[in-house]
Length: 140
Image (cartoon, rainbow, N blue to C red; front, side, top):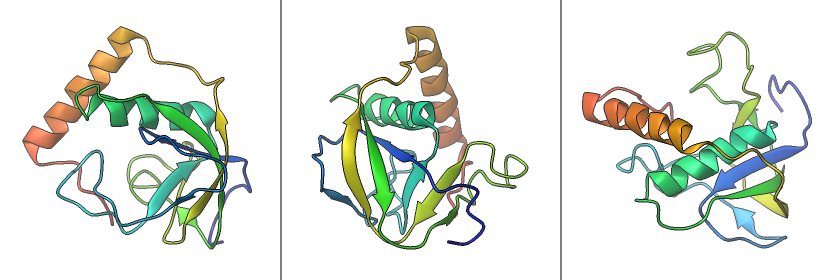
């Protein structure tokens, strides 16, 4: 682990229905920039941060599906997520990480905070502005 601030527990938010033991791997299109195939799988030590990611994944897919939050374990080394660490926030207050190795699903988590409809709409508008403005580069 390089510069990891903690050892978990870790969470991953997604629209995918998964089961304990499943592996989450890099190599899929970004929810935020569909033209980008991701070289890493992202996760956080904040349960509600994973919930936000799950809700955004569903919202960005036209509200198709159900948001899911999973407790996950990295199977290899991981690093601070450079997309938010120091680039947007000093340090790593979002406790966000990424790995080029798979994450193993331990269990689904149900007690995470859902966004209000107003907050979800605000996020939709922010992401639409980012997409249309050509900003929001992903450090892949």
